[in-house]
Image (tube, rainbow, N blue to C red; front, side, top):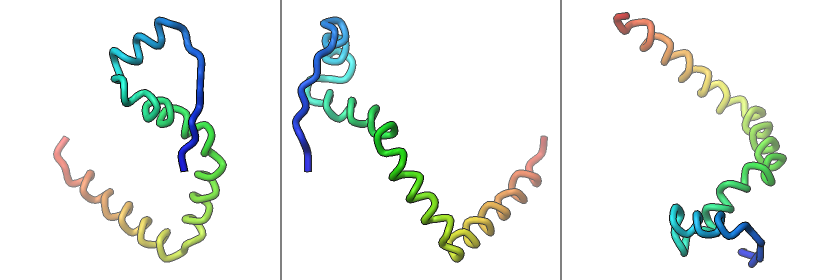
Length: 76
């Protein structure tokens, strides 16, 4: 569900948004910038939940250990 928000910005910022981002993309641009700051707790909870999944963690460890050999085989 989306909510409408009215904000006030400096005239130069407004003009810059229109020039750089484009008229119909400003809302998405601002949302993408703000999301990491307001969703941080939700993200941390998701990471904790993923870390508790032993099968997934085992698979991730196996994958990361397998990539080490790829790097060491490359000439310097």
